Structure formats: structure tokens, C-alpha cells
Picture 1: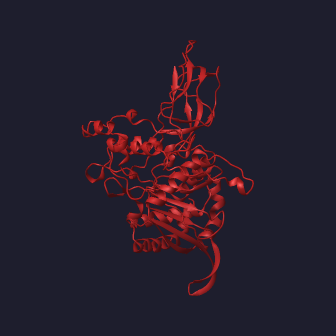
Picture 2 (picture 1 turned 180 degrees about the horizontal axis):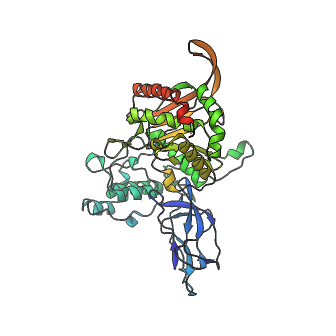
Picture 3 (picture 1 turned 180 degrees about the vertical axis):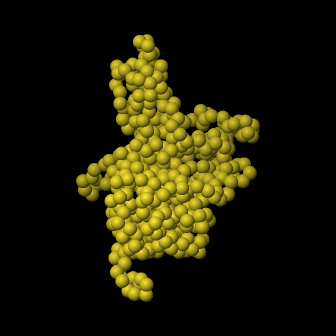
Length: 448
């Protein structure tokens, strides 16, 4: 039987083979891990769908594969599985776009006249359609799930495609026309015609820089994880107007509680960290200011207020920044929060997180206090609308109970989406957050 890459979850259609656990001739059991796939920001083990003997392996480490890609062949019950001549070609980064005629058809809801017009479009007609090559901005246009998935698979941002339907909605004919335009540009010779032996330059291709001209260099290929982080940071930065609100909170009392109870927490499999204290302070603040626990539905133009409180916890790993999600923090004690943070951080560092453990966050926290530095401006984890950055606490002269005393002040930065959150909203939220920090009592920290 043929073993193909199954669908792992929402948004997990593509990944990189990070490891292969079997070799040709090996006998495997049903549900035995056969390879490891790095997808999005997680590494998932792919189980064997049946027991049998591996007769042929069609992938190798580093291959970028999609759902349905042929992984290997198994012979079950002693029967040799017939290996296909070759696996189906899969889209790889840098491969040319498929011909327009090979694209799937729009669902029946599409205008019946749209597809023939696009399919019959000449190169000259396609060339007349403007193509934006600058960074896309603004909300995503309306489009069917089929068009969105196709654009995602081809690496096309729909904000670059001119929609022909009402409200700028993009249909398959628009996407086909856009691709034809790209192909027309790519195949067009430069002004004055190409020189002998010169190929036409690809569309929007930047001229490579020879950094070695000025000294010794070393090149290292970006991992799938690093490319994912890069792409998401760019998408967040160009589509969300980031504004930052700064403040400090006196954590002298919290540090005393941490020192008093941390050993007891560690006996319970947890560490009493400032991240746990921050979540304890954020929950009541988000309940009082629900806008900060919302998201923008860019298709419908609605604000989605979430009635659950799932916190993304930024974890620094040797592979890059990973953000697992602590769920239902409003229903957890401080001990349960601390234990959950510890477990998620360890799973992130050992790359054992599941995709589900990295989805559904409503608000994120990035704590750099353990590394050092003070205020910093974190980037919002889209589709969330705000993130809290925590720096390293520092002892300062501060007024406490009408006296100047040395107090440990913790720097906080709130980055927020200015499309729906105004500066006054952010100021009120930060004031309440600082108050909530100061309101954490020993009764909340003490273990029964």
C-alpha cells in the first residue's frame, strides 16, 4: 500500500521532512512513527497507517512536501506492494507557477462566464492588468475557501489581486488573470531585447548580492521554522499599525512572595515566574477591557470578542521563537498556570508541541526578563490585537507609602492594533494592569 502525508490540522498543509525513523526493509507496526514533519512552528510525528514491511521510501530529510505526497510503500501480509514509477511532483519554493489551464475550477457559486473568459485571455490582454509588486497592505479581500487555499498554495497574497466582484471580492478568474500577468511579465524580454544567451528575468526577482566581495562569509539555509517566523512577522508588521504603551510596575512585594513560595511550587512541578504573575494580572484586566481579547474578522469587517482566555507564551528555543498556548487561564489557579507554563515551555524546547497547542491564542506575552534589557516593543501575534512585553526588573528609587525607597520596578510594554484600539483605551488598560499586578495577594500565591 502507498503511505501518503495525511492532513495534520487546520493550516498544516505543507511541511519539511525533519527525520525519517525507518529504512527500506524495516517492519513497522500500525501507528508506529515513521517520520517527523516540521510544519508551521511544530514538529509532528507521522504514524504508519498499517502494519507491514517498508519496500520503498520516496522522501528524504529536507524535502518540502504537501498533504497527499507519497512517503513510502508498505507490503502487508508478506505481499510486496507495487511501487509507483515516481511520486507526484510537489510544489517547492522557487518552482515556477503552474500553467493557468491547470488550476482547479471555481465552486458552482462562481459566475459561469468568468472561467471561460480567463482561460481564453491572451497574453496581451493579461499584460494590460496592473500587478502590484510592493508590500501588500490593508485587510484581506473577500474570496471563497477554494480561492484562498489556491492562493496560499501558490504563495500569492490576495491583497495583490484586483477583485472583479462586488466589494472587491476575488474569484478564480481574477486569480488566473493575475497569474497570467505574472507569467507575461516573466517571459517578456527586457527593453531593447535580450542579449544573446540571456534569459528573461523572473518577475519581482531581486538581484543577488555578492557579499563575499568584501570578505569571508558563511551561508546557512533558513529552516522551515525560521521562514515561518519571518513570513508571519512581515505579515503582522505590514498589516497591523503597531502602537506601543509603556509603564512600570512595582514588583518588590511579588518578588518577596516568589522567594517565599518558589521552592514549594517546584515540589509541585512548577516554577513561580513573573509570567505566571502576569497572567494572573491580565485575566481581570482583559475581562474589564474585552477589546484587548478580541480579533478582527478581515473578511466580514467585524470585531470578534472572545469569551475565553488563552495566552500565547513566547518561548526562546535554539530553533527560534515558538508560541505555545496556555488555555482557559481564567479557570486556573496560580499553581496550575505555573505548571502549565513550565510544561509548554519544555515541550517547545524539545519540539514536542502539537499544532493544537499552538493555536487559538487570544493574547500573548513575551518575557525577556531572564535574558536582560528593559523595555522592548514586541510584534503582535496576528490575529490577536495586543501583546505584552516584559523586560528585566531593576532596583530604582521610588516613592512607596510617601517615602523614597529602593523598589524593584518591572518594565512593561503593550503593543496594540491601532485599527480598533485607541491610545486612551491602551492607557486605561495599562493603568488597570499595573493595579492588578499590585493587587495579587499572598492568599492567591499560598498553596493549601
